[in-house]
Image (cartoon, one colour):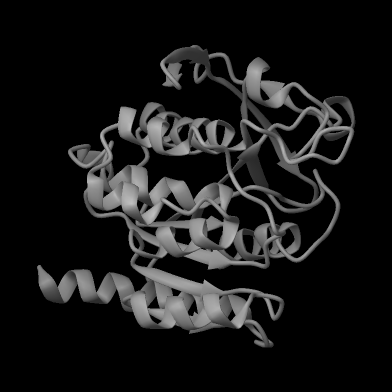
Length: 273
């Protein structure tokens, strides 16, 4: 087994957030790959409800200080890190006062889907890329979990298309069930501001979360159906439009299935070269 550099990007990771269909595999998969000797880096947002003292988060000054423009406004990027208990692995947290200070994940205190969730997703994904650039660490595989992280492959294809650090990186998107919610009307203008083409914008015309997943499928090298709760229509769409598809929703060894996918998409790269 060749050692790979694998970047995991997830909107939710246990134990920093409650265990659910996305937060559990978002921890277990990188742990298993780390145990197999692969080089692993893990990123998630630093939501305000995460207890920094309990989880011993601390700011990484050398990685913080970048400004990211979202919605034509400069937003400072703050990077924090914590060690996963009994895992010999760290998690990097993307933080920002405007987007992640509030004590919420995606809903406000009145249970309304946050109006700026599109901007939060863009800031998160771009923050991950900018941090990895500062680390000078070019991943072989970038595995994104959830709709929020699904923007990252699209940004690599468009905004960071000429960055040599990611020239050989292959991307994977894991699908999970989604609530019946939509992102704000500002999504199209935010993507257009960042150089997305008319073809790209057409994919993001519908802003319900299932459509966001569908758009993301077009920018990745592989898709994993990671949950039995994913709508069948989305599963079928991914099968039809993804170059490589793995249904791991009922797998007894998801790490093995996913690694086989990693091998497949990297072998394809080598055969093309």
